[in-house]
Length: 282
Ligand SMILES: NC(=O)c1ccc[n+]([C@@H]2O[C@H](COP(=O)([O-])OP(=O)(O)OC[C@H]3O[C@@H](n4cnc5c(N)ncnc54)[C@H](O)[C@@H]3O)[C@@H](O)[C@H]2O)c1
Image (cartoon, rainbow, N blue to C red; front, side, top):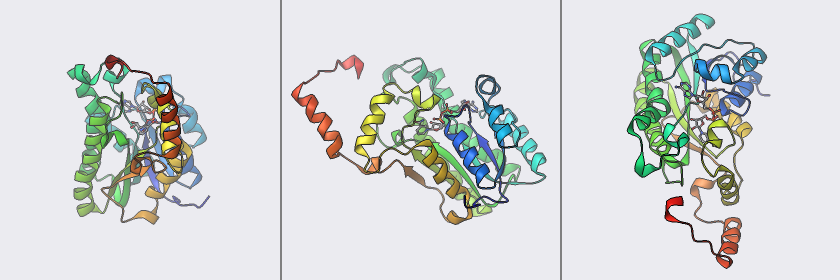
């Protein structure tokens, strides 16, 4: 351990169970000397294990729906009360799509669901930043990170309206990063993580095949949840003070690849035994 976050105080969204990316970040942040408050929706708190995490990290959980400004105000107030002052870092690790969950294809979206997808997975990030700024909740040179995916730049089979949400999320990081940086020296970035077997990750149809594909395509292999946590800690630390408004790929090189030898080898096999997918399966 390097004590990279000694003396730092934070707020971590999105730890549902021990598979969650946010859970791993909380454990690593604790090891690195940070103190933080945990938050999730009341329903996720009931179905998940966040209380166990809070106990092992010696902290509290404050419930909040990230789409509710009122909840966010209450959350930031309670967090600042808990620490007796402002915080230094925030992790936004929040996403959900009812279109994905209910199997609605991209050319037959339910627009009520789409609004929810965008509100939960992207606009909640704006709400969080705007509320934090109005309440002056983050110390100068603080750091905010949200979680993204390469589907913001490239179309991926079955990722559906979450691709639109991630594109918006990354744009919010840039737009707010300008204002918060200019006025408070606060940095805002997104990390674009490899596919990872979490509760949200498992909701993407074909995740097993996707994991094998991205593993073969990435020269360094898929980035694990533990490796994600390591990277995230560096962004919360004082070692990365001038990184802001970036989408940082943490994906073993996948996003820069077109084709690899290891992926080609599998594709070649299927050329010898061609399968013709039906259009409705695509
Ligand atoms: N798992 C992957 O393959 C992968 C890859 C890249 C990016 N991500 C992103 O990582 C983030 C975390 O997902 P995860 O994979 O750890 O899965 P997860 O299911 O463990 O976490 C998703 C979290 O979002 C929370 N959430 C949903 N609606 C909410 C709301 N209205 N208010 C507050 N919280 C809410 C859930 O309670 C849950 O804790 C998401 O943004 C996801 O899109 C995941």
